Length: 236
Image (tube, rainbow, N blue to C red; front, side, top):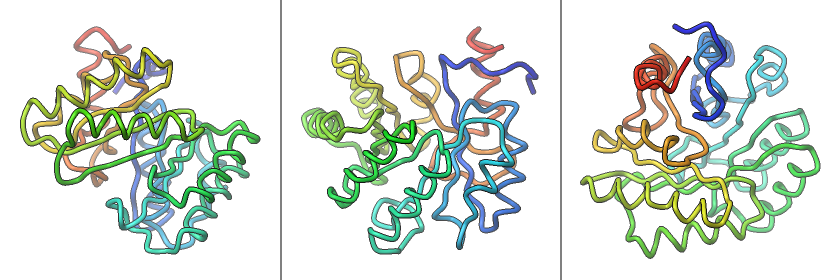
């Protein structure tokens, strides 16, 4: 495992989902040597103590409270669900993830609060079944650009290599508009996109903690993904 700080040009976010705060904090601490950003999945825990993570970890933290309607575990109504992200913003989070299909009024309020607190917002859209058409993906991306968020995130499920091409091709639009975009595919066929996306201009890629649970199909262990970057001459 490398001791040097990982390259910020190819951001690797380690996604942490655990039933208890103690377990989540332990996995997050173990992930810090290979992570640029650590995602704390609030939807995996009951009554999470957000300052506990901010005080206990040194890497920038991304807080996500994924609803059940987008593959997560949070069944709360929108006001309560997004209010928890608001607490993360006020406490000093580096990033929060807001689903594109969140309540638009509440999402706009949260994005404004994040901007006032120097917290970056990731507006996300996930498809755990398939990959939409090129036109549909472009429309999703355009909605993200209009959302007021800092960064877009489009993640689909690859059923063939053409799906991977369509999703990675969104980086061309992102570069033209100057809107940072996280874009890759889930599933076995999408694994290559998790490696390639940052070299194609993607803002960040995601990995699972070593010896920890994945938060999406096809996630690689963090140290394995960092090792791949190193072997390609992109790591430290």
